[in-house]
Image (tube, rainbow, N blue to C red; front, top):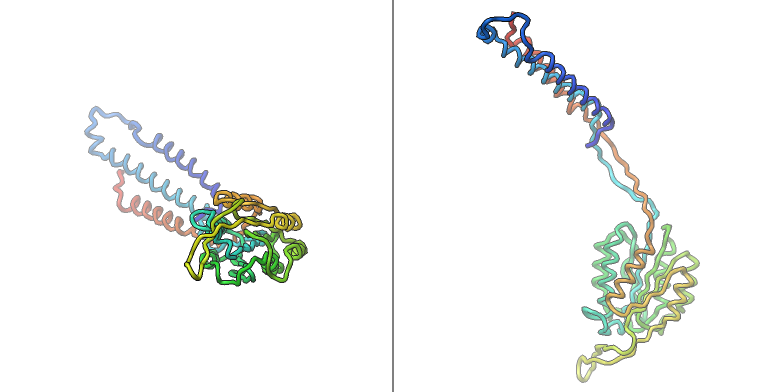
Length: 329
């Protein structure tokens, strides 16, 4: 509830002052005629007259306060909030190739660490539309642009290695993300591309996909995931079962930097889960867009909530004064 004219509350101050002034002038004053005995005044009902004046003044004050509250126009509102279109549309392009199973991140592997930090990032962007593209030797849209955070997070959680042909089609994954953003009318359009390898699959060159992103004013932030040097990669040996293989991390940082520079984004290298978290925090800081909130509210007048009590108090005061209270001649 709100009051449309709250400045009328100031009238309560003089009303209270008048009430106190009335008490000061009318209650407790000595009688004009003096008696040698106060017993006669007590029997004549002097105390009752004093109480009657006080009670009547209090009733009038209460009625006046209710009237002031009614004049202040109490209102209740119903409606909804709508945001303008000045938000960021973000597509996350996530590498799900076999090398993302490398065990140089905690608590598990590169892919699981990337999913954890992507989840934090998604949960922190309350007003943006976001989507998810995954790629290996091919690329598919795991989740189109949406404001439904629960749906996006559920699809992110289901993302795993092995659902696509193996390989690292960076250009194809980037082009797929661009295709999902090119029709967007958002003020800012962003792709966050995470990979741990070198483009070795797909029909689209990464720099060609970057030119396509630039054409549609889409910024691309590229992230190289993985530690320098050797790391352990679990592989399935048909003869001995699962075993760990030492592999060398190979990230095409030159191409990833060129993609970012072409589109006005930035390249980051994340060598552990803490570094990955800092990358997402930095992107979150860089992609802050002021959001205008417009409120559409319908207000209903509720002055009668206080007007009826005011009339009831006045009516009671009249009945009490003229019928109940005993007047002294």
